[in-house]
Image (tube, rainbow, N blue to C red):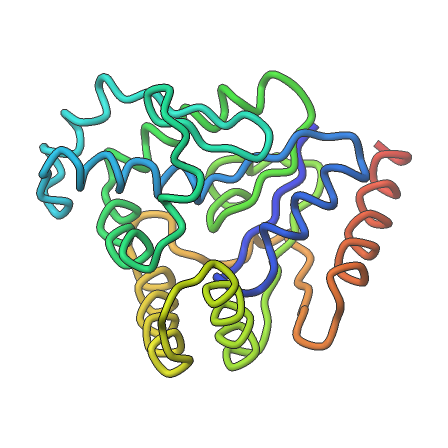
Length: 218
């Protein structure tokens, strides 16, 4: 059984997905972490991230694992390493690479076939799991999203201004929405949820109620 949560950065997808999964007794799949892991691997290998053939070769022997709360790259715990602004900025080219997206879709479906999952990302309801039981598209006011992201980075000890976060977010949103491969758009049957003035508990409660309603009627 699959529940998908798509939407832009800063809308609260990851936190909501983790909490919803815990409430439902589902596993959580952080697909964004997979793209970040590939980005880190590419940078370490000295790959030109804009070169599709170089990334295709890189993927052949790559092993990404997502045990609860962690991200492993070839057995190494890279959970903290993939959350830096540098990885965020570099991941755009990786996420736009057709070969990477094709391979990660395969891996994501293989992982989700093992049980019940809440899957969070940007194309989960449109591309990866078009037949999901319940699909959400979570969004928020851009200024509020930037403030949330800035607080998150500050908590991690990152030195970056709110203006820099806002600028990077604007560029990323435009890139994600305009790319030819799996653009970030709501699935036609997704439930749109604005988190701007909602607490995390409010968001998850609404999602939880809808998923359980559909589970009963399924």
